[in-house]
View 1: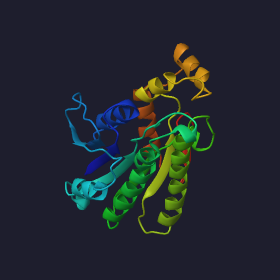
View 2: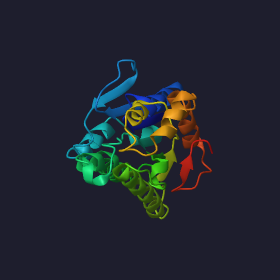
View 3: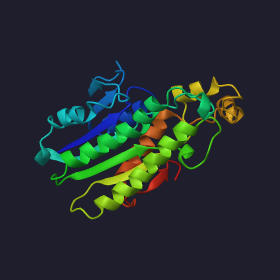
View 4: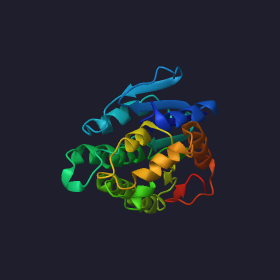
Length: 240
């Protein structure tokens, strides 16, 4: 029986670490990302800009055509792709729509489509949303990013309530990976204090080598996925 991972934003950063963890455990992996990663030899990589939300449902439907439901033991969708967008006070931000589409609209469409396509499947079905502490803690300069992640958290909890009433429903959780050494962190450190008041904290984390490793976080996320005792709709920090 096959175990399948479908992940967005898998070509680099946390997504790359997640893929490496699942590959090492024998999963068949499908990565939907704006760019591909030449290091991956055993991954089906689909280049697609998820900020352009037209076509997402059709894309995932096409991925599902690779599967026979009777041959699948477990299928996991990880909504990982995301962007900080422009950092600064909201009146200075010009790319609001693109950030919201990638961080919130795309995961909503993927979640809806995944549940619909797997509705009659009897295997284990899981959706993992990669969220952030910014979903509940406001950071000066991150109004759009924080709002999009808060929306993901509420979507996670609400879909869980809906799926709890469905026979063989989908389990959905959100994970806060912590502060990980990725390109997103490099973008944060390039900010100025006027746009991002908390920059000193993030500069300090890098200077003291306190950022989490993406490969380690990927393994932690895999372990969380395997834990059947986690409540549907849970919001989980990896260190827990």
